[in-house]
Length: 423
Image 1: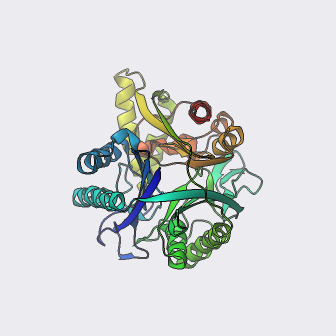
Image 2 (image 1 turned 90 degrees about the horizontal axis):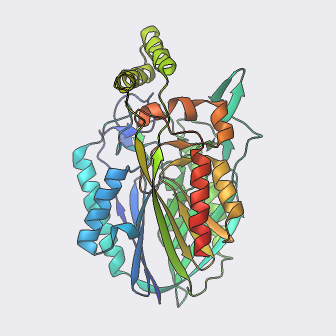
Image 3 (image 1 turned 90 degrees about the vertical axis):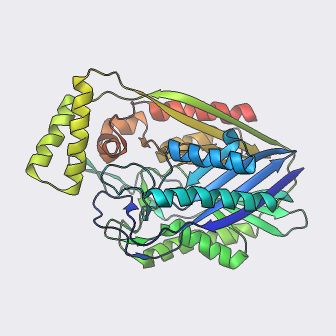
């Protein structure tokens, strides 16, 4: 027997807290563009309970994810290892993790977040009903590859010939009597329509899309952001609420179109797998450290201030002759009939996501990033050599060490092994 319970709860922070997503953003939040929500989907297959939590946040790190899981396990009895916590990755949500000079998490808000998510899960657990499931796919383009070659530099711009993933996957969950329970939407595009000038709390396009869907269906809709590390909205990074609505509505309308064509069926196959690996970090470069020191000496911007702080800490690491640390990563795979979820605690380049979909033995593969943590950008070896923000700069905000080259291929190999062993 397959049962599903779903619930949602408002996690909008008070105005006045720091937003997170851009080092160039100055000042705290000044208003609310859209409310933020956490949504819980409790899955009961023959007595084995799994849980998906979806939050309108930039990220949850490993510690915050573990804290939330532990609270859920204690209060709801769902085992930590059976819980996946996703963030939609909005860049206009409250600070929840460490990102150097990109907003400070508020302890009071973090505590309330844990409480609310646990409450939401408890509510969903009590609503479990026997369910059927189905999936449909469509196509919509609201994103463009952002890695643009400009002279000798790789910048964040527009690369119309670069790879993108236009596939929109919609999972429909109904009661056995045909009454809608929930929808899950999966798409690959960075939620950065609202840029650093924006100081209003917002879930960006995923929040507008799910709100539109919910108003037209009456059921909760969860948005799972796919492999979108190098994919930005076609609108560009703006300060336009109209663009949030325009592109969010494109996702919503395609979802509604697909939804009506999906045939649901009983669940006769359900399996899960996870793999925790210790990933080797890359080495620090003394040349890169000196470069950031010189940049800060010339121009004291928020960006150079953050990188200068990184340079001081990185210099201490090199002086102490420390070997690169190991980074814990958890990959998950969850299969329901002919659908499989493949999850990653990273910002995955779209090429990796496309490769996994292509090589998966399941006809319907959902790539879910920002799951149970977020340790940084993961490119392919080819893109690593081209350098640019994702490779050269981003890790300086996440911590001290870069991820080693080849990480993308390694995660792809492990994810496919997890997926294909479930088939």
